Amino acid sequence: MCQVESHNNVRNASKITAMDNVDYVQIGPLDISASLDYLWDPGNRRVREVLREAERKALEPSVFTNYYALKTFNTSLFHEASKTESFNLGHQVEGTN
Image (cartoon, rainbow, N blue to C red; front, top):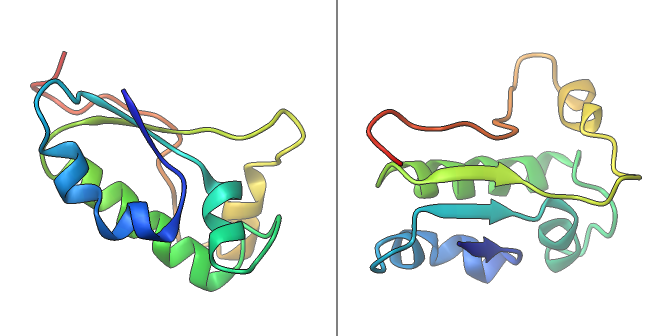
């Protein structure tokens, strides 16, 4: 398992997930939003774009992904920000363990 918690990690997510024995990536929306200077604002349009990029790069090699946030984090922020966008909040890709 590894974590993607900064914009730099997102840029390198394909390299991270290509490493041997990486079968799970945990994405930190609050940390990523902070790294983009949108502290505690994971619903921000730019942050959502980066979160989608992280998820896409993690799923390319069929790696299990999940978002992680504190209990106080409301995942509905993703969905309220744009009704046409959806986010993976944890799923298994076919063919993975």
